[in-house]
Image (cartoon, rainbow, N blue to C red; front, side, top):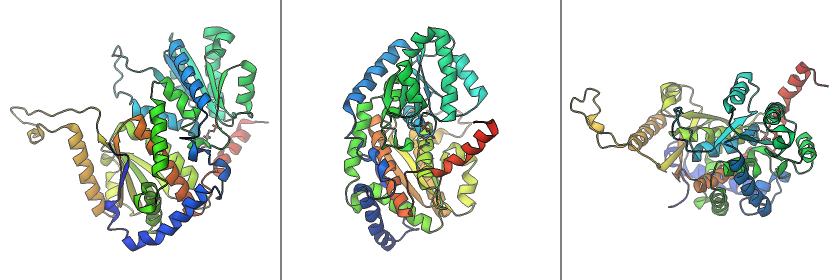
Length: 434
Ligand code: PA5
């Protein structure tokens, strides 16, 4: 099966061939800045070669720790925020989607991975602490800086719970810390307490860290094939080095910049499968933090179709013409349901008898695409052959590299995030931090 494909046919009426030809040298220049590591933020390009140049011994330790976690616990609480959680959450939902109805007493299919420290909600954290009940649990606390408020607070709560349940030594054996190699409060604590510790490499920023221990340990603990994930990313790395005409990553960067220059300053990442919801959350952080600075950037937003066609559909079809869509399409479903006919056909659906739900979903996508393009919304489709770790690895790499190139084309440093400090300063002052 071939890899991920970018279908740009529905941008044809918005962008002429000569415009694409004119922007091609700008894409090449941005890609060169990246490959030669001579652009702004070049101290944070570790992710570029990560799929082939990762620490093999740490990778092995991740697998060993994952086995240990599954043996010692029924639940892994993953504590982290932003880039220290979204990649793992996205991959987990994509590879092992949460069933919409968690019937009590239903067949337990997966080891549970629950995310905490992603907000400061008392209700959210109380619920998790209570829901653990008498189940055995371990904690993977993830923070590159080791000082971020949300995960630090959550870690304090869950560490306390662990110590109450297993004693101080027992708690130490169930805590796995992923943090900076040498710096930060979490590193100091981990060293002092002797936690099993994993490294966020210095040259990989949070939002580019899904293929480090940040993403890999929770995923391995969940039983996801992290070798396949890395293989997919490595194949993506090879594929997206090619020339413009055969390089979807370069073409995606080119087209979204061309659309921006035509006033399309909002990109909607669209999905028709709930398992892709958190891919969009991960993608929004990646593009929002990388491009949104110096008064520039495309605003990354997302919608879950067909649900949101019944809420956001009106605006997309008819509102301000500042949008374009990038659709994630999974070509081959891993499960499907056929409709049968009924004698009375009171619901008028017999015309769909023999059709599968995936077929109907895809027709909905096709119809929506035609309507939105007619309504002035340019549309690209990223076709993912199957929802597997391999193709997800390729997809992660595709979006990361396109983001870096796109950011350089915009003239920003895609690897810093100076704007995220502003709220923290106010919050600390209001809380009386010394
Ligand atoms: O991309 C980023 O740098 C941020 O989203 C961080 O990942 C996030 O703020 C969490 O930071 P840390 O891992 O230092 O706790």
